[in-house]
Image (cartoon, rainbow, N blue to C red):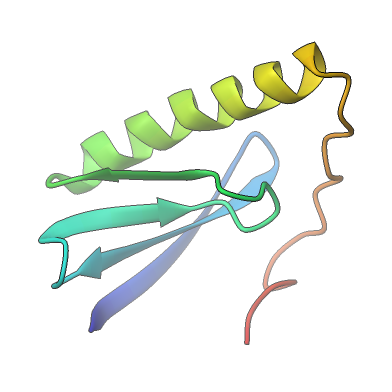
Amino acid sequence: GISFIKRLMIYKNEVIVYWSEKDAAYIAQVLELPGCMADRVNYEETLKNARVVIAEWRETAKSFEQEIPTCRGRLTYAQ
């Protein structure tokens, strides 16, 4: 289950960070960028890794001339 959720804006995209018991790691999801996720055992390392993954996601999208979704702001994807 999810112990807690914390939201943080990075690169103007909302990043949701939560602890996954199943994976025994923190998971960072960038819902605006499909498939953009990072994980680590340490919370701070998860955020650092998320920054790298976001930059790589954007770089890859640009190299394939794909549109990068516009940041929609806080809680856009909350269910």
